[in-house]
Image (cartoon, rainbow, N blue to C red; front, side):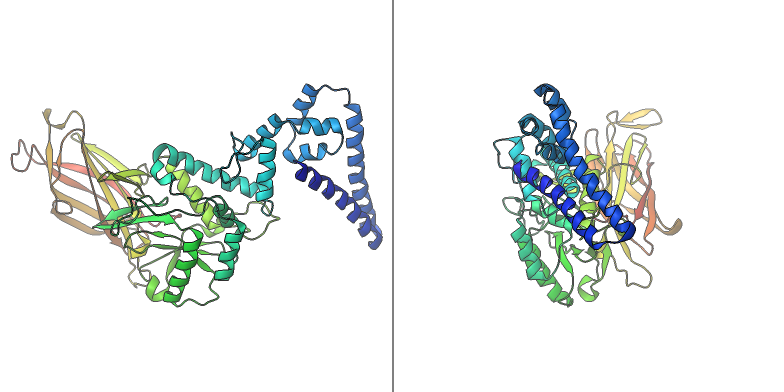
Length: 493
């Protein structure tokens, strides 16, 4: 911890000296105030020495308890006062506490996961590695990654192993030089911990893409979207390619940070000047049209080191995604033994649920920016929706009679925009199928709908037949689909 101790002591001495130098140039009240300020600093150092003399008789256990109440910086400053203080401030159990408290570390490892001999050395290495960044921001970014990796470790370990090691400062500088941008501080730190994802192995498919994208996706009408975080080398190549194709100015401050690995193009751009994150629409190629993904009012001080609460859209976006995963708002979905993160909400109010005669229907929707056309004079917002149908364990119950199966025949939809009914849809089957429901099974299908407004809803019903369509065992009955929202969210994924 010698570096931190020396820095702290040197900073205190420098501040005192600078105070006296400034006094000689100042006049009147300013000079007196500066003189008082520098005297107070000198007095504090003197008091520290006097305190050390008073505590010389205090045993090591008592000193350990005192130091345990200090911050890492205060401990480093106190270590400069006396040999006894230095000895107490060097105890590894103290730095184990600091590592756990500041960095949530239970093992002595560096930011790349390499083992370190002691916690004191661990803390020093972390400080040295991130000395160019605000320490509270480093802790916040690490906390975000830790939460995501904890969730992945428990629920989606095959995606966890796709995370690359952190990038170096030289790697980030190479990107900045190549693309002529200055990467916002929070995004820089995000990449220092993990340089995006590595797409490789048996999961890579030329049609379905890479299902292990950390940002998840959806499927509808045979189209699949799954978004992953790009490594820096791909950020450079994709940005150069797309900006050239779109005809953006060479002075453009946009860089590509995430995209879908499938044939369906979905691209996320970070504006390095403002710190906002954007996603391309259906008009991206023709007109460069994009939609902001994070509330702009939350973005703050993306390039300033000496202010509090620095946050760009990239950090806010990832934090919100982690919150949704942790709270079960979005979950994994398995298709043909391959799992992926599904962006269809699973919890109210974004997901509706209703049970009618033993048939349970859950429904939710997700905004599809890459197919939305904001240039359409009539408005053209696209939404994909997911319907999950299942039969309760006790089966289908009609007028007190139980049936162990029932089959969907008809569908009926009411579509609203801004609470005004704009369309009624009636027809047979769903996506060309007549699902037969039995206890213990779930039928899931996805479809899509368009609105002229950014906010609306969908509700309706299905007509089922007890038994099956071929061998009906009773009269048809209606199953409710409770209303669920179609709306452009504040965070777009």
